[in-house]
Length: 133
Image (tube, rainbow, N blue to C red; front, top):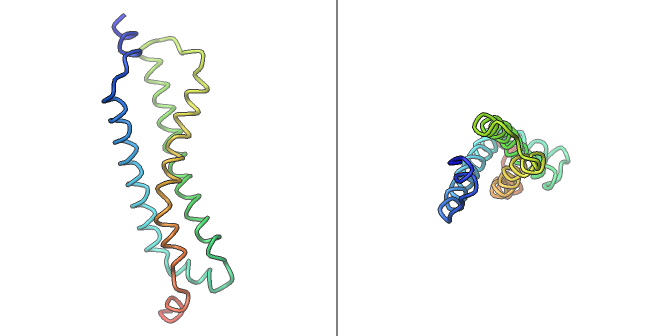
């Protein structure tokens, strides 16, 4: 009975906590991509010099951010389903839809978090990279 009450009770601070968690996750993905960009700046500049367009290099970083979010979302959704099953012993009917939403939400956060690294990847100066080589 207490578990059903807790599962159905939703208050404003729950939304605030979820927003904070997604914000921290987004900052972590942004930081990871920026570090990745800094470490591979020469490689990206060389790829641009070989004919890759700015959009292709940016797309590479964008899909890395989406992939990071998706992997985290899938792992989190699987752990949430296992925890729910342990607590309530009966899984809900709409489990597949809820799990898909739980897995895709972090992918959207990863896509949004990759905007800054994508803009920086587009701004890599090819001439400077070639001069440093």
